[in-house]
Image (cartoon, rainbow, N blue to C red):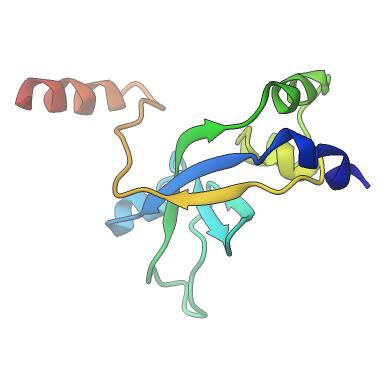
Length: 130
């Protein structure tokens, strides 16, 4: 089994933190995390929601990755994105597509991301405040 083959190479770990407002939850630029101890799925869509589609509590990816060189080599050996990685445009989903577990670790806060040109202004304002 593929997972047994990788046990000697340690864990794949990714960080996450709570989403603090509904705007961030609804943003397609924010990868949302569904997990138990491990990553179950990650999406740019607003997940999870209740039956009414309301934001209650959610987590986002912080993009702090930890994994061995073996995992990096195997990640790069794929000549194309995996099915859900291609749809969501979230690279950590490649490991799930490979049948591997990704441990999730909660951190206290995220960082400011630059995903679209208008994010540069937010970063500039934050840097000026410091």
